[in-house]
Image (cartoon, rainbow, N blue to C red; front, side, top):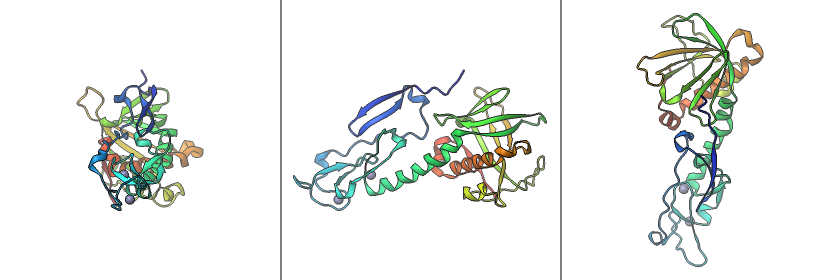
Length: 256
Ligand SMILES: [Zn+2]
Ligand SMILES: [Zn+2]
């Protein structure tokens, strides 16, 4: 069974065309609902510069917050992937700044995570390792691991994530070294805080038992090692965005 169903439909809303998942429950957890527009009669003036609306000064609604603005205060058309708009949509100054930041997140971190990277995984206390390609599902809800076996780990069922960096000794309980990975570049360039693995704890669907899985960038995959480190850095970045954390419901441990 694959949970990566991509059935989508085009929906026209007053704000523009949206590409929505057929089954909303399987949509990306990062998706936002469209806001209620502030009714025309409740805003005689621009909610930013207070210009009075008339025949010349027309009102426009920000597609992200739904508030009313004059053309000057709401002129920017910015992509809004979190509301699934196909084209860039009109947004106020405040919202366009947020949306632009989110575009970076979509263009960089999410892209890297969805492309996937090679890891060696071990489960629980088992010594046996498996080589898998780990990637974020298209709907951002699952980690898919593909090797000899196929695993699907739902993000919502992951209780903790620890990013392991150089200095981590496998098996050593107190010797985990977590260094700041906030700048993904330094990781990619192989600085002294290179990510070498990830430890996750999760409860499989319908189970109360907490399982542990360790991901390491194996020495065997030299050519892919950089990609694996970038993948971990992207994962770290996603998990350090408070909003993403909240959306995914993951507790992230990060120590210096
Ligand atoms: Zn204005
Ligand atoms: Zn706005």
